[in-house]
Length: 286
Image (tube, rainbow, N blue to C red; front, side, top):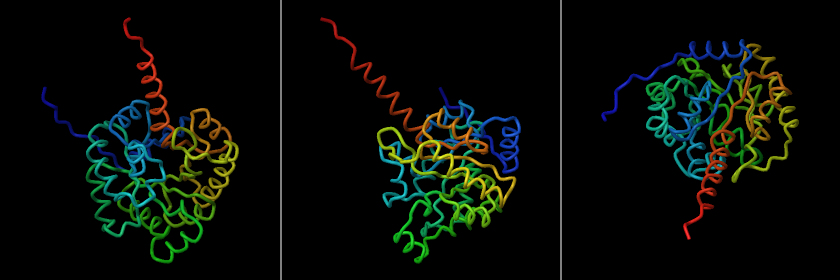
């Protein structure tokens, strides 16, 4: 049977933000989730997900690596993300906006042209990942001093907004929350509390869900003080199950959640283990 040709839905920034605001006004949780393969994209869309995210780290996770591999020089971050987004994700989503995690410190690309390429394939959201914000100490100081900076991420988001993208800012502490919200006035702010706990390659984060919620509230307060109408989401650390997500929503005044491993790695690990074990447990005749 021949594959039918169909035009994919394209979104404008205004359409996506109107959709987000409508969900919030209806007291529905705004939900973003990453996807590293087409089948994950198909089924998170079926779940009602408000926006999918494509990142180099997500694709590497589907290869069995940990999330932080996406911060390590094992591949071309922007190239890997663009390749699988254009060939695996965009062809299968039907009515779900897609956001791209873009490495703003990529010295091998003209970033404005790369953003145009993302727009051409139908990407409507831009997020700063991989991000220097996950690095601290002397290594961070050396990176910043040699031109690999958090400010480059801020300027990328500012430019992307001018281009008509929905901008989604990651920050990791109150100082950087203030910098990125003041500097780029993003549409959505996500407090990244740290690599998600759980599963075979999660980080055993010391935070309890209450700790994660407390740090999230502190960063929300900073972001909202600067931009009162900003959309606020939580991500990472102790937030690894729907129950954790509900606790975060109960303990903060945010609008929703962003998940990565919690919806596309840990559930796959559990489901495959369960079903494969059941097959292995079958009895042969005699």
